[in-house]
Length: 93
Image (cartoon, rainbow, N blue to C red):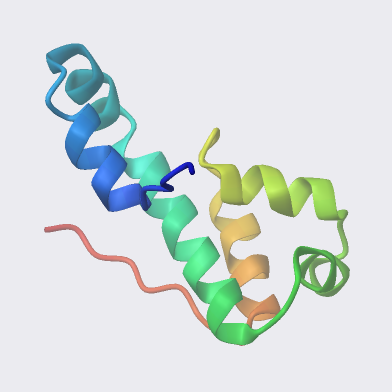
């Protein structure tokens, strides 16, 4: 029987590899944005298709936004936030 690990467990295991840790840290912003988008959609109870319809785009665009493979522009983030009933909060710490 296969045991499925959650993301936090996998991350902890993989972060023991210095090369993985360095690469992961270089992508931290992308991961953080993707996680925020996923959490906003989960909280809204909407599907990717429903978000896409509200944004005036396609489900595949929403999937790419949520994948963390690219940093979306501010207007796109704003549309996504509005589609979920949320808003964008920005801070530099």
